[in-house]
Length: 172
Image 1 (cartoon, rainbow, N blue to C red):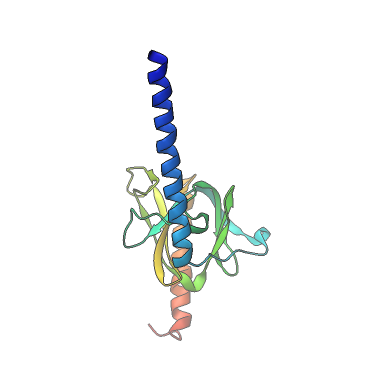
Image 2: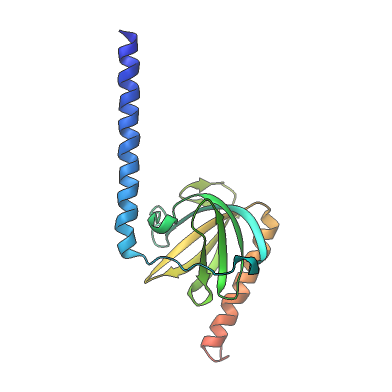
């Protein structure tokens, strides 16, 4: 009699897991219509000033609990974050790598966490805010070494300032 209860429990857990998987897959398929696929790079060897860490996720900037599942943007992975001529590159292991074009970067900051990873430290996560299609999204990366993350954020801020100066013709 006891083994019947164990079998039923295992079957119920498998059913719940399957329903969660199907829901996430459906979310990714729906979001593919809404979000364009981020661009990639032809030459990842040019990635410079890299910061090693963990790619946490990409979420809607207005709703931090709304993870973007389309195009693999919700998949957690190891990442090398760095600069390319096109913008900021995220070279990911086991997931689709992509580039955030310089013109699409809105800002950069730090936070205690986001969907998928919560550290509780005020500056534990490096958060890139950028434009994906018509929407503003946040991409979180947990740097392996926090001081490298802070230095990288300063470089991104400078990149954003330089890009704004180019777009305004140098006037501030």
